[in-house]
Image 1 (cartoon, rainbow, N blue to C red):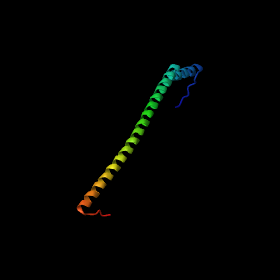
Image 2 (tube, helix red, strand yellow):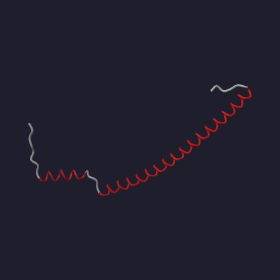
Image 3 (cartoon, rainbow, N blue to C red):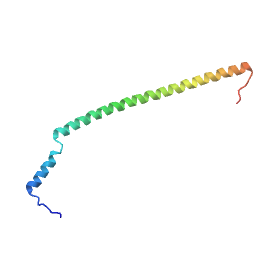
Image 4 (tube, rainbow, N blue to C red):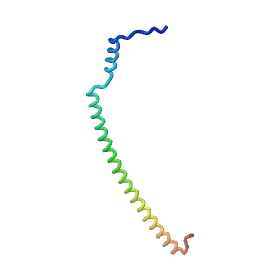
Length: 92
C-alpha cells in the first residue's frame, strides 16, 4: 500500500539545498552573458558581410543584363546585315 512518510524540516532543507546545487552560479551567468555578447557581435559581422555580398550580386546582375542586351542587339544588327546581303527578309 501507499505509505506516506512524514517530511521533517531537515528533510525539506536538504531537498532545497540539493535543488540549489543544480542552479547556475553568478560566474556561470556572467560567462554566458559574455558568450552571448560575443555571438551577437559575430552575427552582426556576418549580417554586414551578407549585405555586402547582396549589393555586389545585385550590381553583377545588372552588368550581366546590360551585357546580354548589348550582345543581343549586336547579333540582331549582324543578322539584319546578312539578311540584306542575301536578299531575304526576317519573318516578323
